[in-house]
Structure formats: C-alpha cells, structure tokens
Length: 95
Image (cartoon, rainbow, N blue to C red; front, side, top):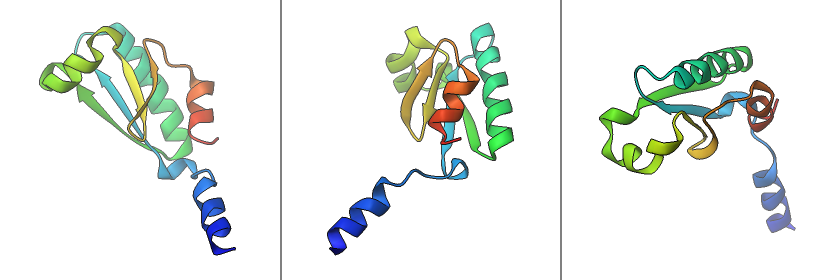
C-alpha cells in the first residue's frame, strides 16, 4: 500500500512555479529574440523562473544544439526549438 501511495505522489504534476525554463540561443539571433519574448511573457504570468544560456560560450551546448537554436528546455529536457508557441509552453508548465 505504501508503494502505491509513493508512486501516486511522484506522478502528480508539479505546480508551474516548481519548473525551470532554459533558453539556449546566441546573440544576434532573431528567432532567439522571439523565443525570449514568449518565455518572458509565459514565465512571468505563471511565476516560473527561467534562464538563458549563450551557445557561443559553451562548447557542449554548441555541439548539441547548434542547428536547432533557439532551444527551450523545461526542467532540463528539450521542449521545443526554432519557434516557441505560448500555449504549448503553458501546457508543459502545467497551466
């Protein structure tokens, strides 16, 4: 019985404020600017923290994501790339 209760607790969705969004992009990228605007709006409205990483400053990010920027991660998992849709990001954050 305790195992079932623990499993149920782990499967409950997190509230939006418990997520972290990461934007991976580079300076001078117009798609990155568009993605940033969507992330600022959605995260601001839901109280979600977000961060931005510059692909030109991190060789591993550059190797992994160069052809897909901007890339959006939610809790470290790739959520989207190129274009970010506000409604899809809201759903991913549990709103």
